[in-house]
Image 1 (cartoon, one colour):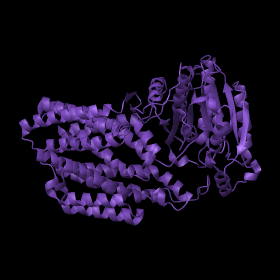
Image 2 (image 1 turned 60 degrees about the vertical axis):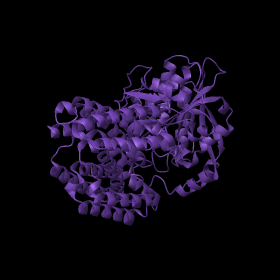
Image 3 (image 1 turned 45 degrees about the vertical axis):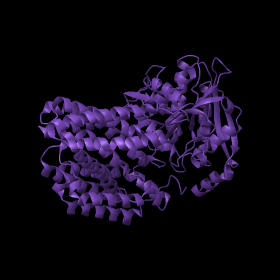
Length: 627
């Protein structure tokens, strides 16, 4: 019975999570005029991405002339805005082999305006960059963004006059140093009229499009976006966690420039098919048209909502928010996190009370469950890094741009390898550390730390996690003695971590608070239905939580790994603990089978990561030179 519940609920969660990662079907040229159509946008993508068109290249002028004509056709009365390139841009272009003098050391933006009914109202700006990396056709980055802007303008016109004006800015030299955006927001007379920005980007050639960045103080922006995104094909993909993570990374897009000027808005990108990033393979034929439909539809609905709003969003407080599998978006104030934590504590206490009366659960066993969760975190970090570096160095230690782009091509192998590594850790926990033995587990820790340090270099986090994992592996008394001890211990650990995250970064705490609350609800329900956890009926709440929560965590794990997994594979250790929040009470009692499955997963993980070195050997990446 437990095997069926365990495997069935996990399989359903995985299937739902994978389903939610799919892009919407592209709409054809015959779709209604008020809708976004990827097929219509692709005619522009094919013209833009026919050949590489970096600043200073022969095709750059061709693309500029083509886009100027397209904007004129849309009634935007386009103009060109030229400005001096920065020394950093000139240096990078020279490294690529381009001649800055051929452009007069200038970047040239294309600017157009679709007038609204109220010329005095703050304008909305749609932005994408039309230059490409040196030898990449740039069909995705950022031909798809430019084409989506043009198709969105056409659809907005078809919907009728808007309250406020739309400024269309196709920037130049984004790939060099965000120069086009800098020039517009420092020199163009329209810069002070802009009240909100919608930017489109790409780092890859497919996948769902994420709204990954907003202006600061985003409460009103998110409320507007969450309503508008309901109309978008494929729904919204966004969370305050992604915004928190991106703000703490060194990356930048054209949106960075207006954001630093205090202008609000939203920033979209898709990052799947990473091998196409800045690559010769980024052609119109290789571009996922479903991704174009998703990013374009979201951008259209967000822009249209801004244009027709009585007032544009103003900066205030940030909010906590996240979509559930693209179906709907949950939004709440940061302070509500404390209330949710209090509810989690109350439900956990009720579950502990019920379990104590039925199974003689002790506080000490819950403490041992917390230590088991800590073991998963530490062991997961160590094993994830060890498996990850089998596929190549961390990007910070990549010796050249060629090495970096090689790692991008290996990213799917890395994700598969790290995923199986985390499955091994989870299965080891469910099997019970005694089933595998302290010698084997401590040996795995030592081997993983050694591989990580030899192939990946010194990482203090890995070394510290290795020490914790080793100590807990050899200390047999740290393992819980009951299912309830293990389950409630995990919930208690996530509760403690959630409190810390709520105090330090409430926008990011949702990754801990929401799953912790769901697990506490399931535990309380199980305590009511059948605290001995012996019947299928008693385990139904855990099955439902595994499907509902597991699907969200598995879906989010893919998004997180695409974003930061190359350098921080250990983040999947946290995701593993979160899945175990729901799965622990369903674990079969056949410990030997679980232990064997854990060993098989670890061997497979190492094999997949090592295969990446042979499947995607390092080779010259001609799309761009060293940055």
